Image (tube, rainbow, N blue to C red):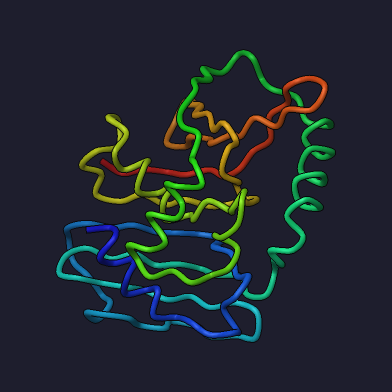
Length: 196
């Protein structure tokens, strides 16, 4: 159902949305829905759009930051993320586990399936769509059947980067990506809370 709702949200097209990034995604299934069927733009500002796609008892609300990312600057983004990650430390007391490494082929198959034409998802090392990460999370055993999942993105993930999950005490889980330089480092990609 996530892909069907993603196709609804992919109707938000045009120059204004190229290079846009998802800052937050809220997936809900079951229960009472306030949003209308189909696509609803809840807020539209110069550089931020909040939109909801809904089919039946499933909704997906996105907060999108527009014009924030130029696909030509992939190498600069990777270098900046590596430099920032070098300053961060990995808390070894938490339970880290390897999760998934998205391939360019997985990214291409997803964006083709949902008609996402954002150019940041193209090229040799495309940005992994936030909704592909969400879809994979919903397929992870501990989150299958979740009634609600909120995912906040701190920075983009690129295909080929190893992603890790870290389950903490309480409802938050961190997704991390491994950034290899001289030594492996980890940087927070995003955080999410789940109601099962």
